[in-house]
Amino acid sequence: MIRKQYVLAMSLLCGLLGFLSPTHADIDVVRSEFELKLALVDQKIEEGLVKLYAGYLQQLDLFEQKYMQAGDLHRTLVFRAEKERFVADRTVDAAALSGDPDLLKLQQFFLKHYKRADALRSDESAKLVKQYLVVLGGRSKALTKAGEIQEAIIFRTEQEEVTERYADMLAAAARATAPPGPAFGSPSERPLRPSRSLQQFKARFPHLASSLKVYYDFEDPSGVVDLVGNVPGKLKGAKNVESGRKGRGLDLDGNGWVSLGKPDQITGMKEGAICFWIKTSKSSGTMVSSFGRSSRMGFRIKVNSSGKVDCTLGYDSSYYSSSSSYGKVNTARSNRAVSKGVVNDGQWHHVAMVKDAKKIYVYVDGEKGSSSYTERSFMDPSANFRLSGYSYYSSSSSSDYNPFVGQMDDFMIFDRPMTDQIVKSIYTSQR
Image 1 (cartoon, one colour):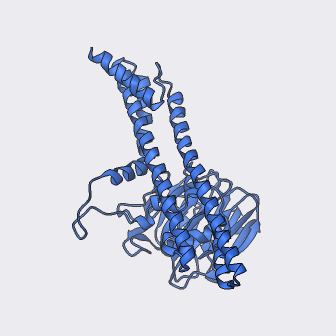
Image 2: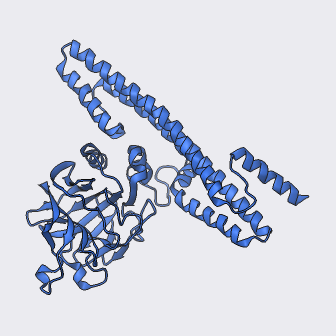
Image 3: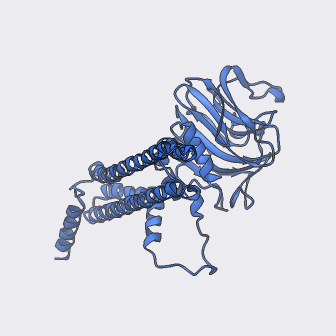
């Protein structure tokens, strides 16, 4: 009797949720149903946001025309500039609202409804994830009881992977429904800094959420934790210290580095972007590098002798016995972009390297420097990836060639290129 009630309950649950209850471990069917429902949630929210975007632009245009007819050049330009910025960015920063009363009202209206849509997306998605986990758990238990152990393991493994993949979303949903925490000033466990959290970044740049593959904010004292969950870094003599840009940060004294290994999630990318903050007083030092030992292909981002950021992508010269020429980049067979501004003034600066289908670009504090034509891939699949120093070899003292001396914070890797406006927006939002 109990067995029949259990089976009936699970059947009803699966029916209500819209997930199939296969007689065998057809995990692809169950997963496809789940992913389709998530996609429908996103589609529903995006349709609402499209209307919100269009309405906001329409109102900006009306105010621009109004003040143009009134001969108020200053306010005309205010609304025109906001319209151009919004077309490129599609977001409004709550920390940088306008001082113009009319524009302020419009921005507040947009933020209010955008936050509602974003909260609805998170809430509905979290519900689907929880429901999917219930279905997976039920199938795993049922198959185990039926003696189909191998098939049960398939569902149990999927359950574990989904729990890990959506850990941030589930944790955020749990915090939203949790009872009030301790009063201000009361002891509490390490609170997240919402202005720099992964959730805050995704809310600020929803169109970049799916392309963000690595995010190190260096806030966890235990090591280098990837907030996205793809590529945990390994400290190799470098230190995670409290004196970061805003909170903790990575300290690099020239004797240590962070190893990313050869992660499948990012190696082999043909296009993409890397963004991070640095603070240094030195006029030399490789900040990020990824070169394959056998292919001699990859890229390097360094501070050059002029104190500017120098990005090189392409083919590496062969090994030389002289330490002074070890692993240097053969500029005749590679492509190079250099920043306009210097970064060796002992202040924090935002650095970005962007690779699209035909060019590489470099930015410092949102300002684009020179660019270079290249159709080479961004990252070589065989390359070791590291922060500070040259990555030609992964386990040799020689791989410390030209290390970076300074501090680093908020390191991010994206698997698609960015526009000038987006790079500047990331810089402005994190500043």
